[in-house]
Length: 438
Ligand SMILES: [Zn+2]
Image 1: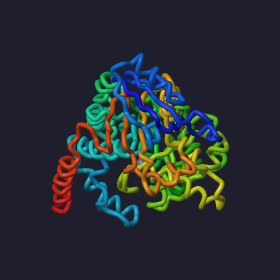
Image 2 (image 1 turned 45 degrees about the horizontal axis):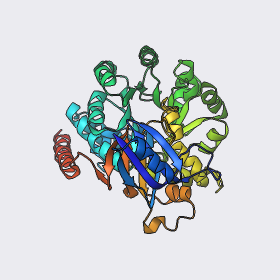
Image 3 (image 1 turned 30 degrees about the vertical axis):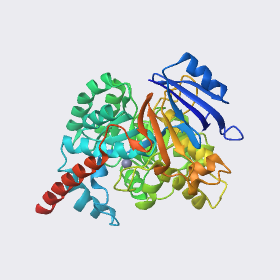
Image 4 (image 1 turned 30 degrees about the horizontal axis):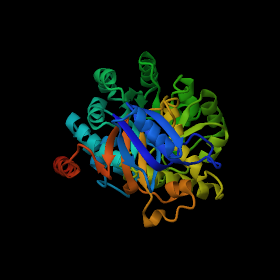
């Protein structure tokens, strides 16, 4: 498909945000790539002359930017949204989350993933990194809906055989859907034995993929791992050979200078999930310090049980505000840096930094349009500040993934969202009833 989006404000994310944050111009898409991104209006005519059948979208009053990359979530957990909140962690897990999850089958995981994907696409997320089990069911939802994803089959001690089966089941999907890649996801240093962590590392190497792991999330984890191994969670996992340039170190709230140096030296990415960290009282990750030391930091929502949504606009705002509060300094993590975390840094995190996350000729055509003609976005004294500090998911007007329009006029193409929500409500009602029966 060929698409021309004309007369829009383009935020290409190619510069450093100092006077080069945006330009007024046109963007042309051919196949699944950005074929043209130029300032001015003349380029529109030139693009149409060489692509006469292109679909033309009027971008007046709108901002075009790279699609958002949610670098950490558990999309199927949308089924448990609002099921149990404001409860101490262990009671929350033992009495609610684990009994509910024990009753999920493959079709439930797919249903939850479809709900999560609908929410993310409508909010301008074009790529997500998912950590769960039955990831082949998530892959099916990804292939159908048109979003891009990194599917990460996860394991803890006790379900390693299912993880190995998940990896096998994914191979066909990875071969057939160009929007899918895989990572191996040990749940956390405290929930996986050393043997399973090492075997997970071998499987990742066999498949040429990286490791995605929750790490340094809480002080309890730090105490437990230091008691067991004598070193910090990051040093322990690094010692097992699991940290390299493809590793996603999710959370990274409690990091010493030594831990940060290990992550920097290995070229790993820290995925920051500020709303989850606040909601379950984990703490504030040292994001400004990580960036200053040269560590790549991406942004994620985490699961809908600890957030409770998959809204990357809220996540951007929370990242900025939490960092300013925890550092006692309003200058840290400025708006452009946050926008980079949700686009450029996310692309680099998943190994697509040369193809994704920027509006440039030759890049994959994952873009979104934000309708700026709203009271809360007016006046537009600073485009970047309005995007990061004011914009909402509901302002997303159009979304293109891999050159295909998936959201238009704020509506999801090809999905009956009301019917999807009804199906989810019916199924969660059944699962809750079975949890109550036990
Ligand atoms: Zn998580």
